[in-house]
Amino acid sequence: MRDATLLGNLMAYSTQVALLVALGAGLAARVRVDAPAVRYVYWRALLALCLVLPWLPVRRSVVVAITDTMPIALLPSSSIPAGAHVASAPLPPVIGSHLLDRCS
Image (cartoon, rainbow, N blue to C red; front, side, top):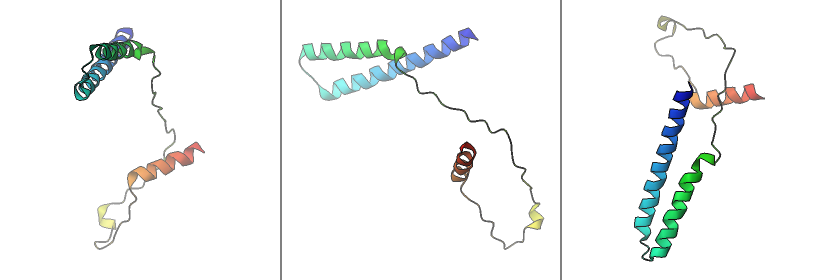
């Protein structure tokens, strides 16, 4: 378990550093600073940011567990008349309002 966590953290850090260096290189190519001293400071600052990256705060996702469920009665398709219009609400607002009702 420890090895899997370590490997996952290493992969996340490597991906973040690669993305940061790629964006930094793209910005450096776009700006085209000719002064070597400025370029040197820029790349040193990018290196410092990459080294500090593991200590920056991480956004954590919150998992909400719904413990009780409401039974849903399923009707056979033969019980719905042929010309009837079945009204349905879009799913994300319904789930959001349900979660907000549960939180309060």
